[in-house]
Length: 357
Ligand SMILES: Cc1cc2nc3c(=O)[nH]c(=O)nc-3n(C[C@H](O)[C@H](O)[C@H](O)COP(=O)(O)O)c2cc1C
Image (tube, rainbow, N blue to C red):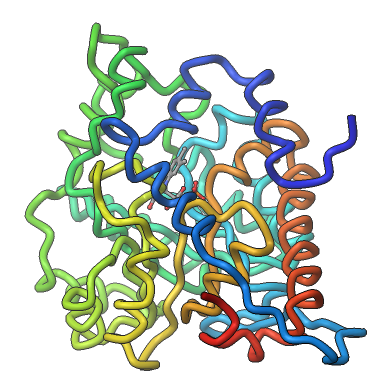
């Protein structure tokens, strides 16, 4: 059977991956309310098409923080690509660049930042979890800088890991070949050693993540690098306003794909409030549940500058390596272009608030 849309990759990826890895990727926290709410929020919105507009040429291109992109679709940071494909993050980097997109590399990537950068012919940002061991943080950010990364994304919704019940039931651990290559010092054995009823990843996060992180720490990060700083995991207007006051260069509206606070607000529902509070002072991106061109269109109409996609990229990587990643991203771009044509909005700038209901 032909693959004709992003979601066609989902069952194919499931066939290829061990059950516990599949659960780790697909699952959310708790009862997975937020995981499902993310998708439902998109499905509840309707598009208001305009007609008799020349759509013979629809242009999906945009620029985010200086990076020209083929479309406003970016690869979200996801951990441990070595569990999904032997070529791991370098394959994701190749596929992302081939699709004209940007790859946000996770703190928990399975391969060294320099190797990922060597494989990438396109822009990269580095996603940071603030670890208690600031020496490791300095080392990672310095290496990202040296490798030419052009953005630093601090994830702020993960002082500890959400309770992912699938992982607890599976006593999920990360296999040694997929181990985080950039968190060099002090990885606890819990990441790899199975213990009944405990997710190894949650235990590891408990041991190494800095739960004392506050707004005051942003100044320290700023001193460390000239890379633009984005905060990932903002879902309220007051936090968006604080982020802008603290001089961040971008905001990513996200609930971590429903993997952190179960019952937390769907990202798309949070987007308009954040956009209102930011009032154009920095780019606003959003992720969580983006699977179709119409989803990208809706996010733009509600004020996002771009979207990020997480799980679908992993499905593509599992099934086809770099080619699978490229295919997933290209299908999203093509589907966005198609939606723009039928909605009578031939450029990204034409997708305003009046385009959706
Ligand atoms: C398997 C997996 C691993 C993830 N790892 C990270 C991570 O290391 N850092 C991070 O900031 N977000 C991480 N996320 C969250 C994603 O960046 C993103 O917010 C989310 O996947 C978007 O939702 P979507 O999967 O529905 O597109 C992860 C998500 C998944 C599915």
